[in-house]
Amino acid sequence: MLYPRLLRGGLLSLAQRNRLMRRKLKPTIPEAQTAIRPAAAPDAVPAEYSLVPWPLVAIMATAFVLLLPFFLFGIPSGHDFEFHLNTWMEVLRQWKHGIVYPRWADLANYGYGEPRMVFYPPASWMLGAALGALLPWVAVPGVYVWLVLTLSGCSMFWLARRWLARRDAIFAAALYAANPYHLLIVYWRSAYAELLAAALLPLLLLFVLRLEQEGRKLVVPLALIVAAAWLINAPSAVMVNYSLALLVVLVAVARRSPRILLHGVLAVLLGAALAAFYVVPATLEQPWVDISQALSEGVRPQDNFLFIVTTDPRHNQFNRLVSVVALAQMAVLAGAACYGRWQRLGPRAGWMVAAWAATAALFMFPVMSPLWQHLPKLRYMQFPWRWLLCMNVGFALLIAVTWRRWLPRLAVCGAMLAVVVFAGHRFQPPWWDDAPEIADLGQSVESGVGYEGTDEYTPVDADGYEISRDARRVTFQGKGNDQIHVLQWDPESKFFTAQVSTPGELVMRLFNYPAWRVEVNGQVVATDSQDLTGQMVIPVHAGENQVRITFTRTRDRTVGGIVSGVTLMFMLGVVAFERKGKAGPAAPFRSAAS
Image (cartoon, rainbow, N blue to C red; front, side, top):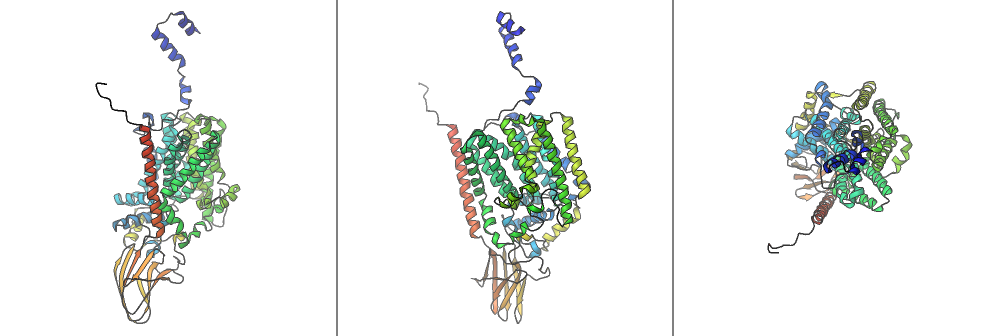
């Protein structure tokens, strides 16, 4: 009480009064650390939000440390490893043939092919192929994982910086990059596209929170996230759309604003339209392949809830591994929630993060089975434990705000690492490939031998298990002699001549698919499929036949490309209009005399 009396008594100078008042109003250090950081202005990026140099260095170093076992044991060969690596090699091979956006995986099913790139989103296989063009294949998986984990950490840093001090945001970013589920993806699953999708989820939450304040200005950024999800991984895109719906509903209810719901719907529609060049063909061409295999026994949601038991021992081993890791993460989240410090994120943001994490956790248990069966497309996520991707956003944030000291943080991180190592050793150790095995995969592609196909992308009436690997590219079925000369056999274009003495049929080492256009002596002919194998069968007449087979642009691909192009122009126009409106009208000219 001395300061007010001195001020009133006029015993202090004006400068002294100002210093004393600032000292009295300044919060103490603990209060400053726990204060809620105000959100940055929409177009301003404060210096403390910058990733350069130390936040980026810390995230990159964390991602590198996560890869140290690569140098000791080799490359982890998880469930999807060969699928991704073969696809990357296939895409790079087709780029060398001048095919910028491949659609037909020419060497799948050992040369019979499949429309893999029609249905599998392009972002991950384009990134993998680009790395393969620059690096030896033995280094590509590690570099890919390092880049993707760095991107994930950067997106979490931008989100965490909304509330946390710089060093706390760096910790949240590093923890998100190296969270337990990411370890499972890298070392047991090799689900490289799903790992890339993890970089979108912190940005999704960030833009939904800003949607509350900035309204329609955030529709375009949210639409870009939705579009990116579709172009990275289809199951993750389903999860992103449902997560966006949940978060937008929470914000709309809290603000009592139906307009926020409208903005969310617009973002979903614009995002899907922007990715239409992939989404439309992947949707409309599903009747042309055996897409039902994507929900066959073992990969259905009901077979993959936490701690579920099936008739497949290997499936049960991995399920126990991921279940133990998921349960450990849930226990840590529950402990953080008991402290109640998640409200440091703000009353509304804290509840949103907690609700999102709790919903993700709940969807991993059989009690949610009815929703998995009836909500649109949700069952195509296949594995309920994929919701760990979303839960990890809350996992990293809540640990960072709950335990502010480094010793408890290190204890939690060490405990989670111990859980992963123990569960992996106890239930299912990872598999490893070395350089010669990677070289064998590359040789199979370079030599044209090919690789195993994918059941759900196999054309209807085809069977990849009944084909002959010794079959000729073209075989004549008919009486008499034949002379066949293959002049061109590229991934999307094949040309050969067939001199036959009697009418008959040519059986191709190629699965029949409606996108193939076949011309015999310049005339388009209808093809058939061979029983059991599904190989293309071409009728020919006696004499010389010039046969050209071309993988054509189907109507759905054209429609999807037009929709994407129009949507992109529309979104660019919206952004330009908003920037022009923000700049305001130009000031009127004034002469020096005035």
